[in-house]
Length: 124
Image (cartoon, rainbow, N blue to C red; front, side, top):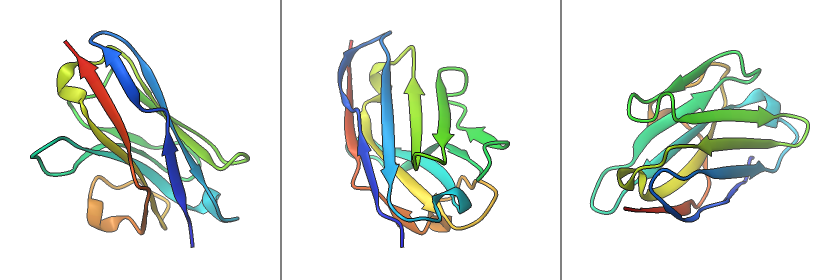
């Protein structure tokens, strides 16, 4: 069982930065690939990025590639999402998720555990 709690959301102007953090409970955090997803109002939840157990594989959606960076600290049971050059279209609730496999997945259905999300609002 893994419990996930996101933090770090807020209101930021376009072009600004935010760093989201996801804290995980459970001793086997290091055995989970971790993903970030987001859901904008009126839209489906979509993939943002994901990282393997060891951090050697990382995937990003085209919409955030080059602007967002995922990192993880298995000793602290945390995974972060650094978001730079934010745009109004990045406004969404951001969720972290854990997948009990090595390789990161872009598919929501592959993830076993989800946090409750944190709101990110980017003003123009």
